[in-house]
Image (cartoon, rainbow, N blue to C red):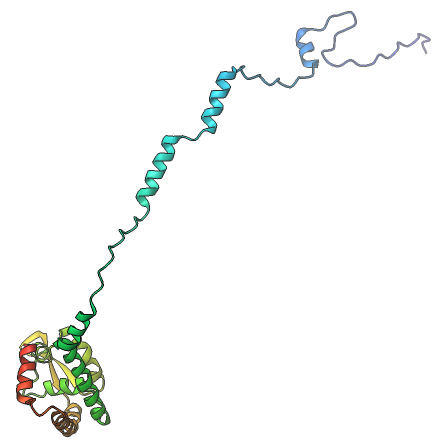
Length: 233
């Protein structure tokens, strides 16, 4: 066994570390340095006049833009209607004139009064005065078309169609297709409708006689009917 003294163990050096007495290479020096954070670049120095003008631009409102927005808002907003001029009051004498001379006013009053009278009388047979007149207008040898019935009753077709619906629903009227014109309709009384009309005729006669008796002595019913027919055309 050799008595040669052993060499001291030296601490291991990192790879790339310079040996004693040897200068470190630039590459190793760069790798061993700690990276410094990048410094924030300073903004270019702005003069006071430039900073003030920029502040003015940012803070002051754009007058042109405000005007544009105001014009657009004005265009979309509803315009206030022009205030109408104050109407001149109608003199009270005109009210008296209408009250004393208006034929339309008194015809309306008479029509409402007669309608209530006949409605009350026909109620036991389940008819109104208008339904009685409509059923009577259909009481013909041949079922009439819609047009002549509307003309007799001074009604438009839409109103007549609406008046026929409850009578058709109750089985008193039947709406048929015209055999000569498939686009046209004819209105016919059913057997139940004819029976209802026959029951109402005596009531109508008695009520009509009562109305004629209530007329003034100088009011001739024939002349009155002629005048009403002339007014209705």
